[in-house]
Length: 277
Ligand SMILES: [Mn+2]
Image (cartoon, rainbow, N blue to C red):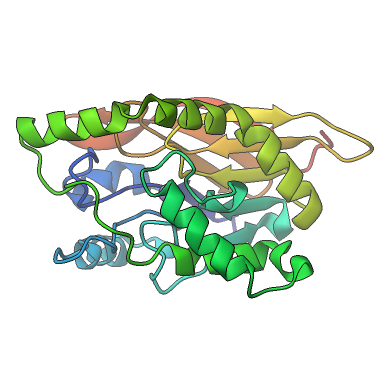
């Protein structure tokens, strides 16, 4: 039996007007040749009151795709029936949405103050040792991400709605700074958590901040180097990547949008899990 082809995607944000994914069928070219698919959180937004999340359409599409699909939770779909992390290739590939790497789930968001308040409250209920565990923080992040107040209409695609969202995105300017800081710090944050909590990991796959890229955390104090892959998102402006795992081979591939469909583009990085880094 050949090794199964596993592809990891994140942040479809289906149903959010800022997402470029308007019909799950547009994903079909990305699934060709895949045996298994991992959707690494924020597949849909289940937290917008009074609006169906689009979950049925997405789940229906993947159910018919022929690829076995695993749904991981993200901060926009914290109540999905699925885990918040996944270990592949014997733990050498660690997949999680990414909220666990930041102190306030999404420190750049308009919800940061409320998220900090909720997490402080939840943290008071567990011991410091318990809090230090990734499992605990993933679980409590899910609790904290449910039913946040709606600050922004993300359902409409009119020019007015877009202008309002753009204004909201750019203000206050401290948000941009928080975002830039998160992007800058992500590889180091991921490296610290992975080395402490998931030491078998050689590749960490996350999404969440919508900033796609591949970074190397260098070998340090006898601990091996680590590759950090952020698969970005299906939203503007940066687009996304997917990760393909086949046996020991990890490929990071650009997602290209053309003719109303999403297709695999060029390979931006390759790693061999069997080779010492
Ligand atoms: Mn997210």
